[in-house]
Length: 105
Image (cartoon, rainbow, N blue to C red; front, side, top):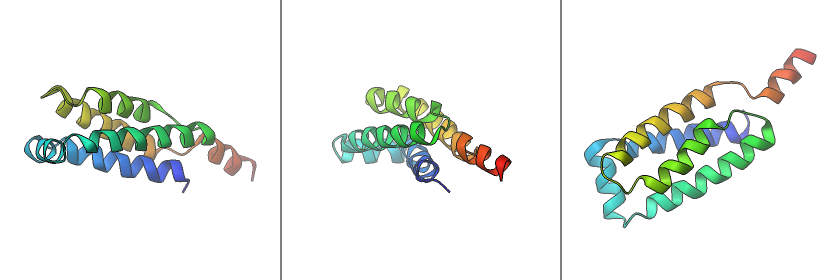
């Protein structure tokens, strides 16, 4: 499994946790919005690795947008949930390069 897929699973799980209404808000506000900055960095790293691997990048791009607007109540919760769904769907797909390599082999 490629590092980009592992990071998609990881960021998807973290987004799912942050999307839980009371728990996510408690984590974000309790840690002074630092989790949003950490998630932004993780999404950027995931996007760079995904582009390098030739995989789907919609989940990572949505995660970056989510990290920027998640400070807005309710919008953040919905965006975290959507990001988690997209990231996990992207993570479950095979990367284009690995699919081509399997076809050739």
